Length: 531
Image (cartoon, rainbow, N blue to C red; front, top):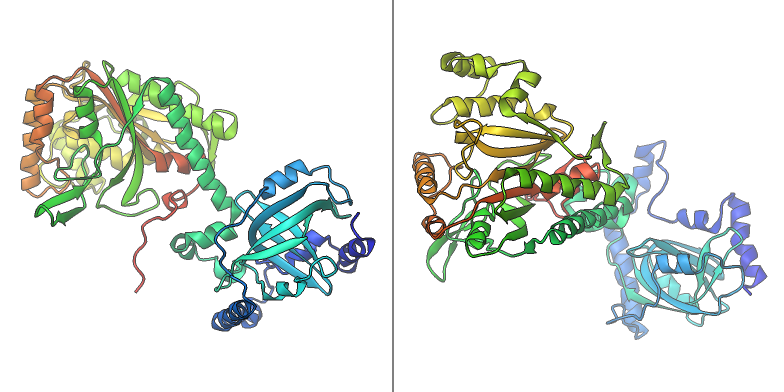
């Protein structure tokens, strides 16, 4: 049974300060109450350099005691979550079973002959109790600071305040933190700092860690749906002498071993199609892609996309696939087909809305492009201040009108079908309108989430279209496709009818997890270097 004096001291702290041991420990935690006078509070913040010096001195003291502050390993039997679950019915008596747990000290309170701390691990926090009467090395706690990693062994009990606690029979230093953790009021109010030092963001903000745990749930759900449907996960090159599969400017470098120019991939599409030529029926890849373009709340130069290709399928099969994967993600995360994003409740129940690009312009911009002659259509560039690089065609103008006037109005999942031929050289001509291609883009919350085609498999037409793109590239259009001779040659050996799709995983995570910026769902987003 826990010493009554100890329990009295712990609960006496509560009565003296009207809070439980858990609450009392928070008084030394890294989450203080906001000061009514920030300027005065700022003046109380210790100099970081002085704190570092103090910690270095403690490290030297440990060395003087022949204590390794950075041991090789620690035998941990229980995580914080396992302790809380297994001992949820604990009493003030010591458990018969002893546990061994470890974590980062997030709160440390010394009360004369006793001390207690909150240890944080991957799963959460657990309280540890230390008594001078039980520990020969009790004074060693003076060398510990918030941020240090500690290992604790002992039985489990519950304080009168109801907090499950490990009664330390042994403890040891696992890693001495030289730098003090930032406290939230002063240290992590700047979002730039959170993104640049994500490791601190994860330590200080458990909700942030939860976002990335749930992002993994999204990817696992995609895999589950695809594997169940017979798709094979594959890997294709990130670095190549040729790029393609999207209209984007690539990152380039030089391979010294072969004295040749190389590119980071902008899409895995052309390699995945080669696998369809090679005899695979269904393939998919979670692909890290790189595009040398703008950075904003929905764009990062490095991003994750899931691309899938299905032999003998077409656009309609890809519609089914994107509906299945996204509705499954919503259910896995929220237990229903809905997810909240900002002020919107997004419904992922099948089927998603469908409309042609021309219908969308008429509905959301009140412009009926089907009734406008070319001259009047082109004049809308001035009306809506639309800049078009290179030659203008009817299809390009319609696409630009859609991008400028409609995209941000598509909140609920909407598949935009029947795109102009000029929009892509990789899709089949529409069976409904020969001036269009069989392509859809899925928009949610004003963002493009997925792009899919009935894939072009006519090698003669593919060669012609890629040669036209190559002319545009030579003419200065940095986002045009290059001419990939090997890809066309692969198609000349025969490629079956194929449906293909790319789904932006980062944007799916933004919407499913209600995060306003793509930087909030990428662990280490690209940041401008500090001077």
